[in-house]
Amino acid sequence: MSNEYILVKQSKPLYGTVKASGAKNAALPIMAALILNSGKNVLKNIPNSTDVKQMIKLLEDLGAKIFFDTKNNYLEVDTSEINNFEVKSEIMNKMRASILVMGSLLARFNKAKVAMPGGCLIGARPIDFHLKGFLKMGVNVKEQIPFFDVTFMNKGVVNNKIILEYPSVGATENLAMFACLKKGRTIIINAALEPEVLDFLDVLKKMGAQINIKLPATIEIIGVEKLNSVEHEIIPDRLEVGTLLLACAVCKGEIHVENAQSEQMDVFLEKLKEMGHEVECNDGIKLKATDLPVAVGFKTGPHPGFPTDLQAPMLVAQCVANGRSIIEETVFENRLMHTIELQKMGAQIKIYGNKAQVNGVEYLYGTEVIATDIRASAALVISGLVAKGETKILGIHHWKRGYDKLEEKLKKLGANISF
Image (cartoon, rainbow, N blue to C red; front, top):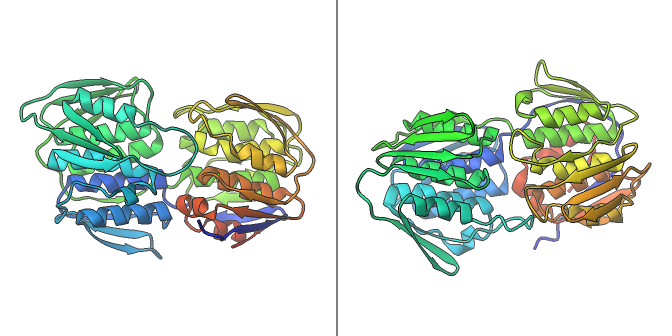
């Protein structure tokens, strides 16, 4: 593990205008989906994060030819020479999203061999929903630890109705990719419809997939024989937008995230307003922080609920707000691990199972803390910006996995942050 760290010092109020990078959680499944075609693809607004670089390695290992202009966030992926359906375990171990190639490899080769994915320590994130869905579609699944061998032998028309127990983003994407090139009709009920999933489905439709989204939370896919190459611009990262807004909320000040898509963030923005912050959504999102923030409770859930990926940084805002709040995490069982680090900084937090009770304090104090996942790294940076003294944040690899130069954007706004 790297000995690098992020050093954050108490900052003055933040002011200025910034743009959010492309959404990592849209870019990764879209990159996996390019396996479905055999041609030259162009993706714009791709974030230069280590998770994206890891997906590039994965695709190259399968035989893809790739050019990545990191300065302009421009990616060319030629999938015409992909000839391998097995993903090495050392590649799978570094990133959760690597499991997403199971569906596209199955669609292209009728077989795939992938290992259990790695990534953050935020919870089990079992792939049961993926495997149950594939089994329902006639896929043979054989587990040979650490690999899963999956094969599809049916040459006829297959009509499937898959009911997900939980609206899993990864399972929805994986099953949709497989269904695109299989004869017949597939219906996914209780599908995830996060903005990033909709961006992903938009790419599949641009390739020539026949996809209809129906209410409530249902995706209908009619299989086609072939998909075409595609050019697409990734949506802005709403999670980075939320992180920037929360940095301003705790430091005070006034910022404008000019490419933010406010309609994707309704519940989150409503909670900021309840705290007393002024939020304007005419041209991107503008936030003017209140000097006297009021603590608010919230409960995470699938879109359009409060996003689990903004729970950790939003919890920090409650640590320095006036009053008591109850925060309930319903998506990942280990996603309150960052509270231990915040307690080291003087935060008054009590944990009861999947709930955190936060009593606001006047000050946090800088110390050495460890980020356990991508969103925890954002939370600890924000806490460092408001804490007295300086905060040394270890686990910097998580920050690099999730964000593209977010520290530079914070610096531009006046944050005191360095590597």
